[in-house]
Image (cartoon, rainbow, N blue to C red; front, side, top):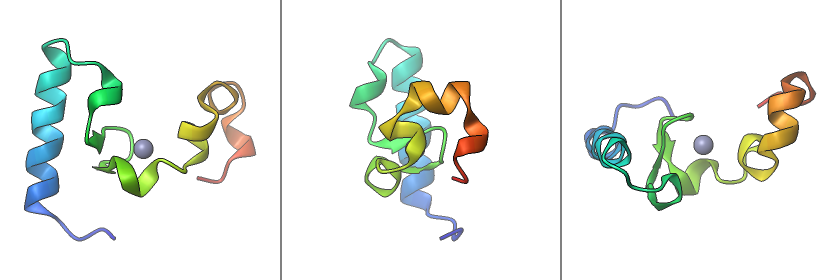
Length: 62
Ligand SMILES: [Zn+2]
């Protein structure tokens, strides 16, 4: 955790660019919010219940 990963950085940049060009966010391999691989944060409260998270972020301690 917290260690720079050149492969991750490249994949994040590629996903950001692809999304800018119209790719659906669900097709990302990386998470822009958490700056990590999707597999590493898909169980985050933000992803499990994004609406509740948006309404009451203080309920989650990330
Ligand atoms: Zn995430």
